[in-house]
Image (cartoon, rainbow, N blue to C red; front, side, top):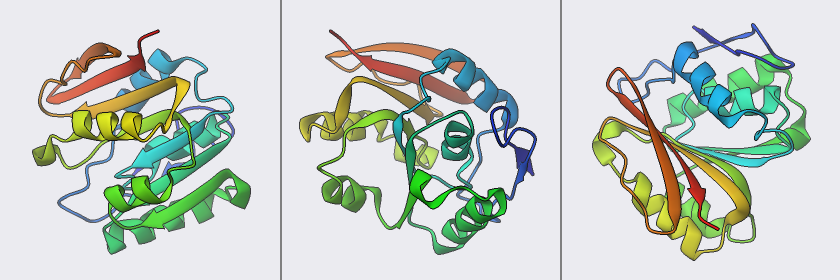
Length: 180
């Protein structure tokens, strides 16, 4: 079990999907990420791609996000995500769930602009830079958008973005911001 670190759901526990593919961001790392973000989740339109248990997006809602879009393609994992949302009693206007491939979600949500993006795909994929560039090209990044990228490889520098990388054991976490 993992728990929500702060905000209105502070201390509440989340179920973890029984999957070899899903590895939830542990409490200590999630706390470090949200310390880096400070109050950037407040009123943010957020997407949690590869949502898994929903821990990142639910932490954002707990800390004041306006709305979170949860995306995952694994049915079993998606069911656990929905149970976590229901167990917390998250207000329906605060979230939307999407069962399917992240590429389909990105194409179908072309009218949305995201303030905060969480990218945590299965590590072997190493696709976060490509996703960021695709979303930039589709004009889905709000002017002050912050992107949190988690993977086990060093994150790539991306032209047009400032990046700061942090290491937590095997996990490489990068925070990207569009350059002005």
